Image (cartoon, rainbow, N blue to C red):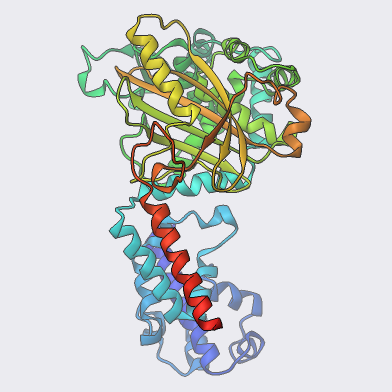
Length: 496
């Protein structure tokens, strides 16, 4: 049903509900006056049903209003802000159903206290304009919340992957490579797969893949991708077919986002590809062995990753899928930082926080703490590249102890060059809160080679007096301290 038709239903239902409440009628009383069942009236008021003409006539007579006014899209002055909200189509863009909320539920809240909630909605819109929050940023924020609600683990997709692997003859625990996945796409789903380079297609040099749907599916893959990136791309394309996901992006990376459904389906397909390349049974067993060792060994973690057709990002994402489910470790975060090799600028380009908002987390205007292993490992990678010694991804770890809160995290990071973009390096990190569940599971935490680093969120919030890598003065911290001193002085004055 079109957005226009949904708006008509919503406005009609809201108008009818308001009329009923103004006349002090219950649904049962309105049912007796109109001959329409209570259940059907309830569905009308919630915007789920639109009545036929004979029922509208009965409703108009019972409410003592004209037929034409009842079917019009105009609402009274008290509900004008609600009408503006409906006509703006904001409700159609919000993925409310994911959280068990219907458009009618929102309108019911708005109609109860329209002035207050309308002001709240207007405030959100104003914040969005002032901070230049785009629709796609909102979509990705909602997706992160969706992942966090489910501990970033989705049993239905895991099961679909294992069923599909059995159907196509991928053995338990086997990590299929790009060649095997390409064969499945062509033979089972009728794809034509071609590679392109920046020389023949310069406009697409920054893209990883393009799906051309005209005259059958034709998948174009950027020739500069490494084997692991190609495998992930092919696995994701299989996922769209296997899961029946029709609404989807046709390019990777994103060029334009049309709807939240595209974002959600792209996530589901990516999750499927990760589970296909890194079988949960195999990686869980290997993680159990790794975490039970008495000493930290970053090389072993990189070697473990190398057994799969997986990038470091996919490998760490997969770990965040499985740690809560199989190890009881749910207080964690995932971060990805990008860095132009040799530059002292770091961009946080992806983050996930499970169970709560952990530090560190994204900020648009402040300098991230340069003591984080996520950043120092990128500096190490740039140095290795300058010296011509890069052979495989770098891996490091630290125990990050936050100066202000006292919280501690085991943070493991892997850094590598980001293909196909030249001179761009990336680090991915998983941080695990140091609590009883972690201490019971991870035996190498007491390893003296696992250095404890005093860190903070950003330089602007840090009171470390002797920091040699500080990028900015602690302006925010000083402001907070000044405000606290003022509050304390006021409290003493009032008490006196």
